[in-house]
Length: 395
Ligand SMILES: Cc1ncc(COP(=O)(O)O)c(C=O)c1O
Image (cartoon, rainbow, N blue to C red; front, side, top):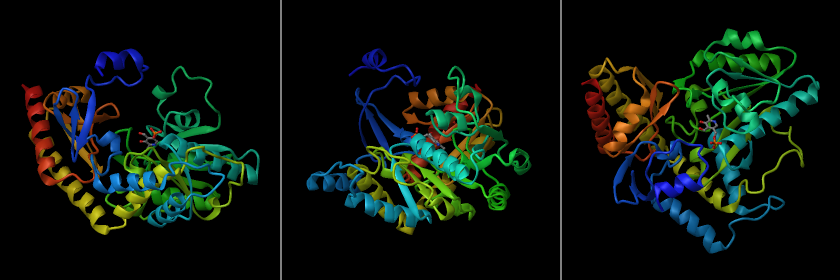
């Protein structure tokens, strides 16, 4: 199938790179024309195990053999129950609602937060989110997203959202009122430009939520599932949310999302309050079980920390070597970014022409979210290509 056919039949929502991928193995993707690409995009932080992973393939085969890909959530299925038990233990949470994407996980969290507020007082429905955040493309999720460019032309948006500045506790405090029911925040702003939260900001939010009886929601759609060097970034910070959302790498590439709860949030939803036909179906849950089992081995997360530090060090060297084009580097584990003084697209396109997939974040950041199984040799190759592209741009 050609790029032209893709352009013709797919709605034009992605500004797609003109390549059709056909297969993959390890850290590499193969295009229809036979060209191979070293992948530091990983399906945007999804393909944690890279491609053709034996463990994930066996998990899929297991459900195929049992003959049960899906049964309604009107019944329990054994893969989902196992996934719920394993995932909540890994996340230090109590209960989970399964869905199919990050936006859906956040919609579930926003609904839960509003019901939590409404149960106290029907006026308690306002949700505070952060400027430059990203929470997904459904109506609740784009409204929670603190970036006007995602709101443009989609009016009317749902009411009851207020936007504070990230890493500025006073700006959050200034917005809290008797109408507030919850605060939603990413521990590391991903789409906004790979901006880690300050430790004091998250501990301050936790204290504020406790004091004002608000739910603290962490959106770990991008930072969850080992990417930070711990199963979840909140565990790096040592700050626990009341509600935790995740998706992307959750099932290793099979579509899946989850909203987890603890404490006061555990019993807000009652039968009929929320649902998803596909959420937690046996195929997705088998992927989640494979992910949970891999993350439960401490050496998996240790590898992420080690490779993250190695990548970060390499990126720092690149920043030092190209001071006219790069300002700084920031990130945690295997979510890393380089702040550029040229449009990221020029570097992304230059890398693509040399067989490396990278992507941008925010207006000026080059983002690296490779599969978590990446090794030193592949990091060296990627850094060498970025170095070449920056050198060419400098000329
Ligand atoms: C932090 C965060 N939340 C939510 C989403 C939306 O996830 P999805 O595209 O699976 O709906 C994303 C996607 O990039 C994200 O990075």
